Image (cartoon, rainbow, N blue to C red; front, side):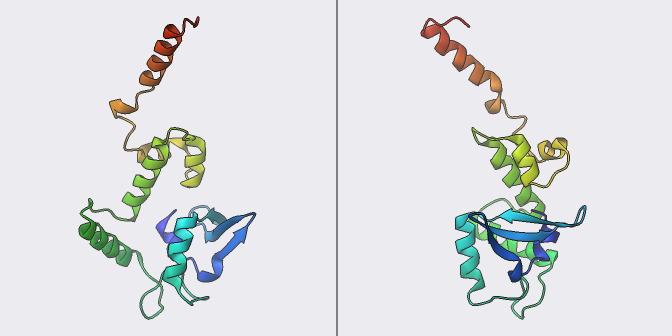
Length: 156
C-alpha cells in the first residue's frame, strides 16, 4: 500500500468485513477510500503494537502525533541494519512485496496489480525485480511438460 495512505490511517479505520480483518484506507491517488485485507500474522503484530489504544493515528510517534514519512525511512533503515538486510525505504519495501507476490507459482498478475493499487500492469511489472532473471523463464516449465509428455508417450 502507499505510505502516504498508511500514515493517514487511524485505529478507528480497522475493521472486519466478510471474514477478513481490514483497514479502510484513504486513497491518495484518485481519492476515495479502499478496504485492504490484513493477513492474520500482520493483524496479530498490529494488535501487539496497538496495545490498549482504540483511537488515534494507527502509526504514531511516542507522544501520539502523526508519524511522517522521514520517520518511517529512519525506522526501516535502522531495522534493516539490525537484521543485516539491504537498506530499503517504504517504496523499496513495496517493490520487494510486489516482486515476492509475482514470484509465487500461482501468482495472478492482475490480482497483484489490484493489490498494489496500480492502474496499469506496466507499473506493476516495473516493480518486479525478477522479470529479467533467467531462472523465471516460462521455457523451463514448457520444457518439463514436454519431457513429461514424451516420457509418458502422450501426443502433444
